[in-house]
Structure formats: structure tokens, C-alpha cells
Image (tube, rainbow, N blue to C red):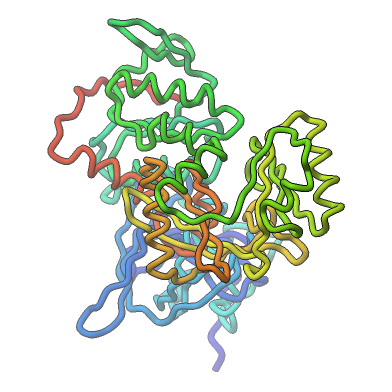
Length: 468
């Protein structure tokens, strides 16, 4: 006899008793095959000889202070293509779903759903034979009030305290910035977003200051995480230097960020530290275009504007004529130009290593779209987990150290000559690498700050309103 089916809307509240999750809002999506649960700090472990996984969940959307610590037996690991196009390896667990007064066992993939509108996605495999969906309705099974949610989860609210940390950046809605803020709050730190353009400073030999909009003096931060976009490097680094003058620990120093943003200087610095790069030429509006092309081995070559970023101002010239045309076009801008040998055997792929505090904490392979040679994620490239070699790990760590960066995204390309370093990024994005690896990279950044303050006295805290 078939069980009576539960009729639900497109959004419903459900629970997972075995995981200690009393209620969570789910998106009911028959278009999705598998179900997915928001999870961070995912860590596999052995329990009585079997594979298990522990993870944390913030069951309420836009609330990172409420945390449930979960453990479950591991069923599988699968590569899943997310709705944003990333191929990510996910852990799969089994747990009993409770919805509409009925319970049954389902499979769930664990993934960071911070960028999604729901902490839970209920897919068709979990619904088959059990649920009927009325897509025009919502919350047919009821909806908790804000007060009842607070009461349900009052024991799961994290205690505040710890460090006072500022994220110095431009866009509070950017995935990376939101994740860093949430990761800090998850660990009990007081997090504040500091908009670079809202900060201004007083230069004084005895009482230097940084003010925030409205005249608030920023004089009580323990640490700053600079996330400075290239277009505002000069002012962002000036502010970072001012924080350093105030004896505030900056996760990346102003000097390190400045030199990493100078493509030519950074390449010279890396070569001086014994890090191999593709053969590169540099000129300022060159007259002898032919010799510049010949210098790097002839076409095809990559032509870059020195001030370009995120794949912009980067052109592949496949013939001598095309190379001369591109260089001459850049010359008309009176621009500084880098030309670089094209590594054909890389097939539009590169490796992004995320280095924090001298360790490679994650690595992904980025692959360009068909017909595109730039593997940047925001240009449509895809990301997948990759196991890097010992030599690639050594290069990534050496490059970050050479640039004096505590946090760095190190881009490496595989060539017939061995791994070559392409670039070192001082404000690497988190979305692609967290999505592909399921690792809490933002949390690793917070841990690096905590390691710096271990056994060091903290500043006396003053209670302030959030800087929004």
C-alpha cells in the first residue's frame, strides 16, 4: 500500500531530528535531482573504523550567530554541478527527514549555500512517492514566527567576545566579504565592515587617526583584513598603512599588497626568489615591436596591459601580424606592455592555490570556456578540485613568501618545462574555491589572525553600534 502523500508548497519548513535540527526552511524543487543542506566547517573523520563527517550549520538565513554542530555517517562523495555552474565535490550523508508529520530516510549533499536564498534544497529523489507539490502555494504545513524560532534555537546562539576585526573593502554584498564576516562571527569575534570610501585619516606625528563616516574614530580594532579591489589600490593601501601605524594587525600589509599589484615588479621579485615564470618581455610603447615579439619566442604570444586585472587587458595574438596590431593599439594608449610566451600545452587550464599563513589550504583547477584562453572564473571558466604536486605546492608557498603575503591566490600553469607561476593575487576571491572544494577558506583566514594573537594581550573593548 502506497503511503499517503504530503501536499506541500514551493517553500516549506522541515526538520532533521537525528542531526539536531528542529526546523529549517527548505526550497522544494522538483527540478533538482538531489537534496542539499547548507554546511560549513566540513571535516571527515573516522569513527569506529567507519567514515563520518562533522559540519556546522546556520539553520536560519542571514543569521550566523545561531550554530548547530552536526555529525553523520558518510555515504559517498560526488561531483555535483551547482546552479552557479561550478563543479564541486560534495560529501553525501543520509538522515531522516520530518515534514508534515511524516518521516523517511533521504540522502543529502553538504555544501555552502550562503549565496542561496534557502539553507535547504529538497530535490525530487527525496520527494518521490512521498510528496505532491503545489508550486503556487507556500508554507501549507505552517510557518514558525520569529519569536518561536528564537525560542527553538536559543541554546544554539554563540557567545560573543574575542577579537574586534574589520574587513576593509568596497562591497559588503560580495560573496568573499560576506563569508569572511560570517566566519569571524561564527568564531565569536566582533566583525565590522569598513567601506574604504567612507574612511578618512588624520596624519599626525603623535596622534594619527582614522575616522569613519559621521566622525567615528576607528581606534579600537585588533585586526584588519584588507580586501582592496585594484581600482582603489592607492587609497586602500594608504588606509592599511595608517592602521599599521596605529599598531593594528593587518592580515596583508600595505607594502605586500602594493608590490603584488605591480605586475612587473612582482615578476622581478619572484624571479629573484627563484620562482620560474613564462618568458616575459616588457616595454613602454615600444618602437621595435618585431624584436619584442622575437624576445619571447615569437607568436602565439600573450599581450597584457600592465594595469589590467581579472583577465581584462589581456589578448592572445596567434600570428606575428596580430601581435604587431595589438601592441601598436596598446602603444596608442602610451601604456606599459607585457608580452609573454603562450603555453599551448596548458589547454586553457591553470591552477589556483590558496595560501594562508605559509600553507596551501586549498587548490582548484580552472578551465576556460571553449575558444577562450583565460581561465578566470568570472569570465565563465569552471572550477574543479585538483591534487597538486609537491613542486606546485612548493612554488605557491615560495611565491606568497616572496611577496610577503599572509593571504594569497597563487596562479600556476603546467607547461612542458614544468610548473610556471603566472600571478600572485593579494585579494583572491573565495566563491570559486569554496564552492569547488567545500572548504571553509574564510574560516582559515580568521584562524590565521587568531594564531597571530595567541598569547598576546588584546585591546580593551568599547561597545559600539555596528558600522553599517
